[in-house]
Each structure stands twice: as C-alpha cells, then as structure tokens.
Image (cartoon, rainbow, N blue to C red; front, side, top):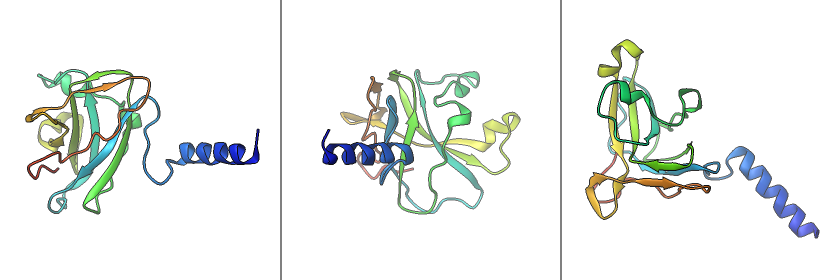
Length: 152
C-alpha cells in the first residue's frame, strides 16, 4: 500500500470519527441542511430532526420516531442554516421533520411543548411531505427549504 493511499485512509477514518468539516451520517442515515427563518424564540430548549416511517396520526404514534431519544442531536440554534445528520435504520421514511422543544418539556405536557417547525418536502409537489428511502448508504441532501421561502 502506498503512503498516499495509507494517508488518505487515515484522513478518511479521522473524518468519519469526528464528523469532518460537514456532518456526514453514518451508513445508513439521513443528512442535510435546514434553514432558519427569523429568530429562534427565547423559550426554545432545543430543535431536533427526527424521521417517521409512517406519518403519525395519533398522540401515541408521535413517539415512534427515529433515531431513538438517546441518539438525538440538537441542531445549532445560532445561525441561518444548520447541518444535520441522524442515524436511522434502512427503510422508507414518510416524514422527516424538525421538532421545536419548548423549555419545561415533559412527556405529560408534550402536546403544548413540542411543535413541528419544518419538514422535508416532496421536490415534485412541495405541498406534500417528501419520502426518504434510506438504503445501506446515507440519504444525503435532504434539505429544506426546498422552494417558496420554506424554512423552519
């Protein structure tokens, strides 16, 4: 193995370990960039990106998202754009959404302290959520806003 190839391998390994210059989801996963519009409210505890295999239609189904709670990573709040990367299992995801969490959140008050603040939209019909198919490689460039000034 040449030194150049070995060095490239070490650089690649280092970037994979610490996310490199841009977040890169582990295979499989979903990654992209969200764009903020306006100031983040002072009452914000966090903003997370989560994915649902099927669109949630009940309060109980709101907690069937991926990644698991212990793997959630807060989006940066200071800035116009926020790159994200979430580890998810391979499969089809019908809703990839940014969730705003208000200070004081508990499971008992989730109805009033969690809000959908933006979601990935179908590039062909931006009035509909975009479906993301995650194979063995990461699904990347799952960005929003897509069109028409959409933002979180």
